Length: 245
Image 1 (cartoon, helix red, strand yellow):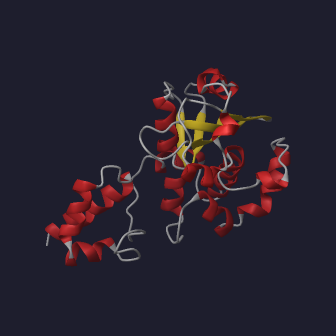
Image 2 (cartoon, rainbow, N blue to C red; image 1 turned 90 degrees about the vertical axis):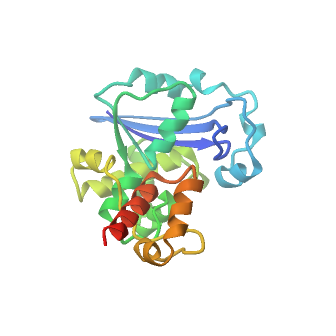
């Protein structure tokens, strides 16, 4: 079984919780979709609401995640025969783990796989790829195929069910490049990032910065505690290369 998953949260701090879950499962010819708002007792920040369009009024009276149908579905299919497919899967699984859910099945991360297979992309957010790879052209057809009764305004960024659909479209796109097993392998293989996409050196090659301002890279490693795993790997890699000269 393939389970395309997306979560929306009350914010991005370590104390934040899940407020919405969307999933589409495909098992041979059987397709199941679920979308739910949940209330984990954490207030949604205004910044989060501006992104996911979920307000505190919307989750008032909603059940906690453990009482949702989506939770029960994931628990029922939590085995080695199931694969969760998500964009930045480590984040989603970390948020689920914080709620007491540990996944025992396989994992495909479309974010990391895309970075490996299409490194020339300027950005790798799900919404950017939706347009860059023209996934939007097939979204209505795929929604009907998955029996999703989505209206026009639900095809928006950060609706958990819509994003689960975009993950499926991206996965299908990547399948034209690699097999399912190869995508599984790439999901656990570090990506060597070439350029910074933030800060004062945004757009500059990390290798170049390792030569002209090694101290800045060392400062990042020490002070940015929530650094992306691939960025940390890449900085260490370029610093090691520089040290070998």
